[in-house]
Image (cartoon, rainbow, N blue to C red):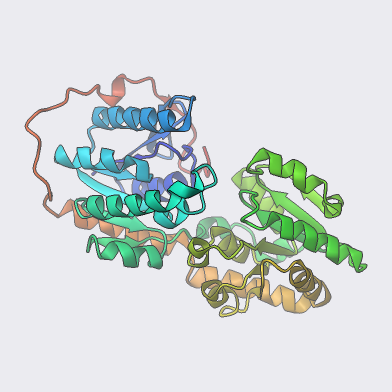
Length: 407
């Protein structure tokens, strides 16, 4: 099938969209395109990437202009199936349905819940916007051919809108995991190095992590906090740097996938200490599974769902994410119990190999497309037609090969 993935927000090398979904569908033999912002046209791992350039002015204009650009590119490609990844593209999805296309909505997060904590939305407006988004999702999802979600909690809601809703978890890629042996990774470990990977925000626990490393060192246990990611907003970095604990922090900034693998192999444990926001408490944090895949124990927020993963698989410790002393105590325990920490890391790695890996999840995605290939179209077709430019007339730059892991 000729398949086109659409995003107006995510980068062309997004892990879920490109590295996992697009590459898996291309490996399954489909003709795969990806429309994404701020990238040049190119082909990588048999995926044809089509770049759009959204406006760079105010947020609303950028969203509208990007959606228009995505739609124009989508029409030019003329695929059989369109798979979009941003809620602001729901209208585009509906327009494509009216043109007789098969359309899939990929729901990465619970957007109505997410709206309630968006800092750029004025607080008095958040509830009404959240309700409006929920209604729009209900209306649109019923008309799409399928919905793909990242967690069972989101699937449960969308099942009430569209019976053809499937969960495709954002688990680590097993092939990347097995490239290194547990023994070779243990030989690289630094002493008392605690790692956090991802966007660095107040909600994701940066202040508590810095206070915890300060607390740990204040008690005579030399420890280091390694941060791999960017601060948001940038002003937060300056605020956190003023804390005494910052002297024990190694901020590496944003890292590529190979660099992330290196820093994982050097760490004592991984941190995932998100504050108890409702939408996060039912999420599946990809960094937790990456820590498990790397064979290091985790210190995670004590949410019931996360405890099922961490305590249930005996691969780490769960603490109150708002209690920096509890976090420091967990760090100290792992330092003082190296053999138990090593076993936790091996338990996590084993769980990923057996259960929590992308290879298993990709089978669900490919199966969904196989079902769509044999299914009839659910919508009426508009009478008008569009004359689109053939993709071959675009300037395409071929990059890399099937073994590339990133753009």
